[in-house]
Image (cartoon, rainbow, N blue to C red; front, side, top):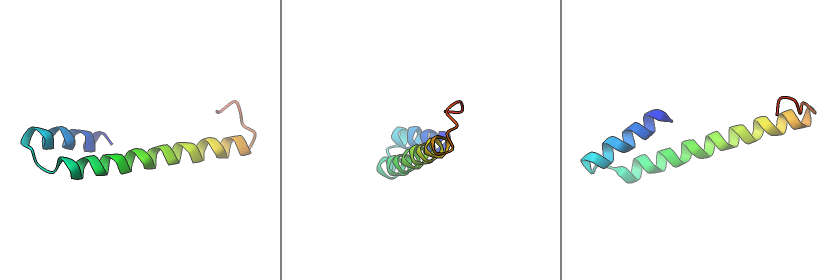
Length: 52
């Protein structure tokens, strides 16, 4: 995700494809949120509240 953020900064400086980089960043953020949600749900189903 850090790489995409740096690409966004570079694109905004040069004025190139900011929209494309922003779209990729949004996708990565959604993927990260989904993975975190699945991890928490799995731990709650296992009744492992200490790890939550």
